[in-house]
Length: 133
Image 1 (cartoon, rainbow, N blue to C red):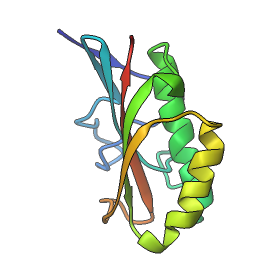
Image 2: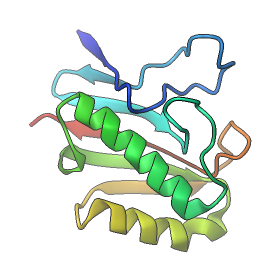
Image 3: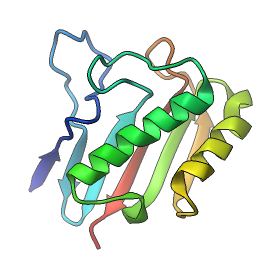
């Protein structure tokens, strides 16, 4: 049975009309795993992009993920895999440095690809899988 996990301190994405409910859950727990939907650099209240700077976008995105994890009683030490989409692969060095600093030495597996997130102004999107074990 799946359980929906929601944090008021992170946006529910889906990049739909802000007046319409999102078709997505922030996260779903299935068994001992938590699947966190792709998060972007959005303000939790306004659902607007917070900055054009890749470092600030990375910090906001990871903060939103951190808040969703916390709503499930988890943190980055429980994350086993992350997937990252960067609009501009030239942003990788600045993204990676910010990512490393934010995780404070925590290790995860990660795939990072160049892609075009669906929303204008979003230059990074990250999802993850965490374990309750």
